Image 1: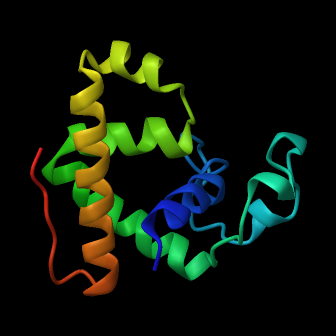
Image 2: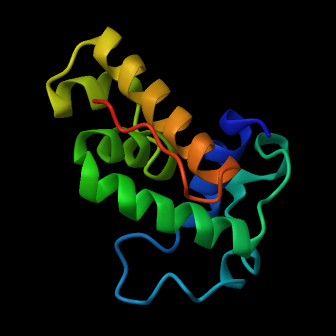
Length: 123
C-alpha cells in the first residue's frame, strides 16, 4: 500500500466533494466527468468509492484531533496549492510543512492498515 499514491488519488476523488452543499456520499459522480487538467497521464489508478469514504472518515478523526495536520493534507492533495503558498498561509517553515505532511500520511496509513485501531497524531 503506497500512501503517496493513495493520497494523490484521494485528492482527485475528494476534490468535487469538498466545500460543496451536496453530501460527499454522492459516490460515483466524480468519475462521470473528467476535467482535462487531470487527464490520465497525471493519474495512476482511481481509488474506489469505499476506500475514498474510509479515508474521508479517518480524515475527519484527524481533523478533530490535530487540525494542523488536516490542513496540510487538504491544502496539498485536495486543493492542490503550491507548497510555498501553504507555507505562507499556515505560517510554517518548509521543514515543518514536510514534517506535518509525513506525520499525517503515516497516521493515515496506520489507520488504513489497522482498520482505524491505531494511529499517530503528533503535530
